[in-house]
Amino acid sequence: MLIRLLREYLRPYRKPLGLVLLLQLAQTLATLYLPTLNADIIDRGVIPHDTGYIMRIGGVMLGITLAQIVCAVAAVYFGAKVAMALGRDVRRGIFSRVQQFSDREMNHFGTPSLITRTTNDVQQVQMLAIMTFTLLVSAPIMCVGGIILALNQDVKLSSLLVVSVPLLGIIVTLIISRMRPLFRQMQDRLDNINRVLREQITGVRVIRAFVRDPHETERFDAASGQLFDVSLGAGKLMALMFPSVMLVLNLSTTAVVWFGGHLIADGSMQIGSLTAFITYLAQILTSVMMATFMFMLVPRAEVSSERIMEVIDTEPALAAPVTALPVGPRPGQVDLRGVEFRYPGAEQPVLHDITLTALPGQTTAIIGGTGAGKTTIVNLIPRLLDVTKGSLSVGGVDVRDLDPAVLSKSVGLVPQKPYLFSGTIATNLRYGNQHATDAELWRALEIAQARDFVERMPDGLDSPIAQGGTNVSGGQRQRLAIARALVHTPDVYLFDDSFSALDYATDARLRAALATEVSGATVIVVAQRVSTIRNADQIVVLDAGRVVATGTHAELMDTSET
Image 1: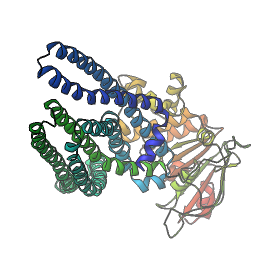
Image 2 (image 1 turned 180 degrees about the vertical axis):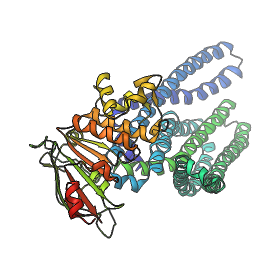
Image 3 (image 1 turned 60 degrees about the vertical axis):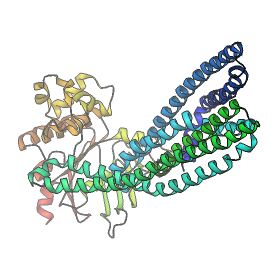
Image 4 (image 1 turned 180 degrees about the horizontal axis):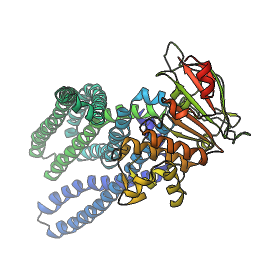
């Protein structure tokens, strides 16, 4: 999965990667050539006392070193640039896919896990990429080149590599095989910490109201302790890695000096060649150590890539139609015909055989007890959910065949729990219409009965709004959400119990203003208070997911027991 992710997202950067490879090749070859020149200086310059040869070859070594530094710096620069671009593109891919998810997919993954996958998991893959481009690319070149040049110095002494290199490989393989499952557990337990922390931050008022601080502290400590235990296990294995590598490196160096000393005493090897061989041995084992460090990152990056691709490969349940239809012939008209909806895994449908029509210029109200299915109907109209049976059309076209952009333009939703984004009042009101003028914003605020408190704010439309609208009251948040829908100017307005936080006087003024302002649009109101909907053109009464009565308030008072 890791290779697939890298292949897919690195495809646009093939040219920079090719340049990185060439630069790493050049700097590695330069590094490998330096010990041979050093051996020549010792054997042909130092021992014979030839100062001119030492200066001449030393100058060549200095030039090669400067070229090696330039290539190394350029390779790191371009490698880091590609790795950062990889992280950006993967995050964008996850974000784009999550934006298409319905409630079903969101509930399947969970918000904390999606946050972890978009941040920490992408960071693991990005870290692997940057270390690969800056270290791992040069490691095999260094290893192979070092072996060839070591053989060139002395074949007999090179037989030590047959023992040291495979031994190091076996040690690394054994350690990494035990680390991979620990990294999977680490990411899962990081998800759990995010979940617990998110719950505690969101519900801090409830926690304090019920004095559950000690209990929540214990919950967080338990989640943190689980991550600590797994991280400690992985850390112990990682700590074992480097001493093992250094042990093999030092033992190999000791063996080379021992056997090399005997070869020099026999006259079959020169001092410079032994010095170069020791340097090549260090370079070979260092390259293996660099690869070892990389392989410590690979298991975690592999786990992270699986989690990332799991999100990207998930097809949204609410897929866009292959051939999307434009706006229908009856703008604003909403028709439900024999609609049934069942949540995934539920034994019984939430809605049973719902049939109703909402016409432009009329207000259709939906009322019923808790769990009757009111909000579900509202969520079906903008296609936040798909009907499981029957049909639902907006403007005369089934919502499953409509262009999602057209449907979004046609429907304005004020949800049961209004949400405001961090920014200003103006940025929130322009969320559905970026080109709205300040005059249009003030007009929408006036209709929503929000102009008075916005004018009292120091910066007016530019007053800051915290994430979720936590710096305004519930009633102010509802009115700002209603104003946002009005700025959107859709054909269909959906108010899902959007007046519950308003007092009766404000509720009455808002409904009176709405009646004149959106007189040509279709208005669908879900309410708990009868007073909010008593003047609606038609009221639909729901009971246990079924339509049990339809009519005006006066008619229903006479005919509907519910």
